[in-house]
Image (cartoon, rainbow, N blue to C red; front, side, top):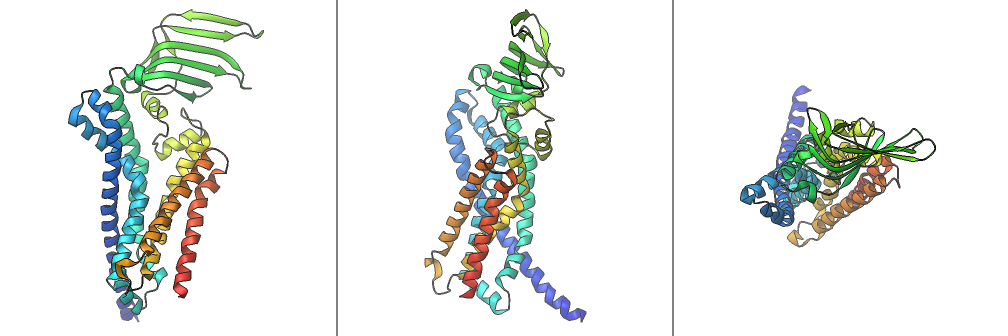
Length: 367
């Protein structure tokens, strides 16, 4: 009984290896093309500022390399979709799928054979989003700040929450170690403003923020205002330079421990908790997202052999993938705004797309 079992399982391993290798190769090729296009578009926007800082070709290459992990994390789902379309379309037109069906391989079984390749790409995507992209964006922010001689004048202002304080920063430089025109507002337990403290210049040195001069505004119990001017002093600010660089970004790339810390109020935050919760859930659901992308590509195996390259089915599948990306972005925006519960906003698009993909496959299987 053991010998037939081994002869039965061996072809499955061979098929799984073939599907995974082909899928990984096509996805890598598609991802490379998408990354090239995205890098070109990004450099078109940033080349002039880089050249204005006299950084030359070295600066362009540095920007492209440091920004590459974040772009790769963004392009991965579409790269998987296009790679799966190329793989399955080529195998269908080459009569490989027809041969496998004649040997008794069903469409669900073929889908399962591609899951090992999906697992590899999902692991790579999680490493990209959790480690490589945050580190690359932090290095990019440091380099961009250090190479700007007028950072405090050109950097945009931003707000963030630092414990019980609400902080406004007019500008920053020296890789986040210098803050300009900073004001800290303090509130009591009921949310009422109790005092404000401002400094025109703030520098980070040996773990402490120091200001050459500060001005404080106290609100007394009878609601009268008391303004005081002080000389050089330390400034109570828990945020470190690296955190300042992340807080200054409109949509920062954070590691999973940093997202948990932001949700637990253990680090300064510039966004609502719903934004950080959506980032975390979207990252954890990446394997499901990639599996849905693969499922949306599966209908191309039903291309009639005589149709050849004239079939519009791959185009429809690709359009379905783009619609899924748009709907997922829409639900994420609703979750970040608090319009929908975060869990529902994160799960809605993959669930709807997965059900739609299964319905299409079952419908075509009945033909």
